[in-house]
Length: 326
Picture (cartoon, rainbow, N blue to C red):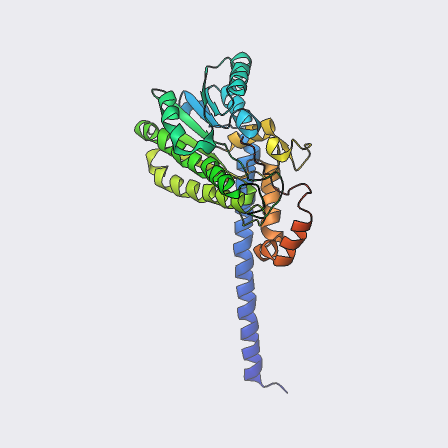
């Protein structure tokens, strides 16, 4: 038979574990309840109560503005009352998008031709083109990958040049554009910087190695800059979408999971000022939650998973990536 003291000890231990379980449950209940409340405010109510982005300043600057998400942001910003500076490498396409904005939204535009893979030499020209403008919003959108499919790091033509191009386009462009625009924002104590990242930057993704790493840089740069600039009246937001139908995703068909670029830009811009890090829209936020909880890092990085992915590397990539700039 169990003695009375032993029974009491057992009951006390059971009560302690029960109390601990209740405490953990309460913590997670509060955490996820607060997450749901924030998601409703950020992704649903923001459709009704929109932030007036025109209060940040007269002009918006968008890099990679001639297609995809960048073009969609340029149109949406003009629709909301800002004049837009478009920066990209094709002068013909820049003029086409500028004409569309002026005709459809009756806003002024400027175009600056620049190839962001060219490194530091382009930024003096960009800085001169932006001189004297009251820039309220900067959208660092331009980005590229090193292949149009999933590949190992060295399995591309001329990997040395491609690596340099990707770093210039994805990393140097964002930091240099921020360096150019930020001083006058700080002087006015007002501004919004939007850095376009990717779900591929939220976790390591083999066979998207360099793209994933550069987007991870975008995430950390944005978080650090937001902390530095918070007291200066500057809002810094990192937007990390999943699949959006653009050139980078071979203009795949849209559905509940894949957003049209213009729909994504509209919903993502609604979140400005509400969240410093966002998936951009409710659909992508839910997908991010599922991936974050059901696809652990050890599985993504496991050798057998990389091998299986390598055997199917000519199939459609899970996350966007191509050698084209946007």
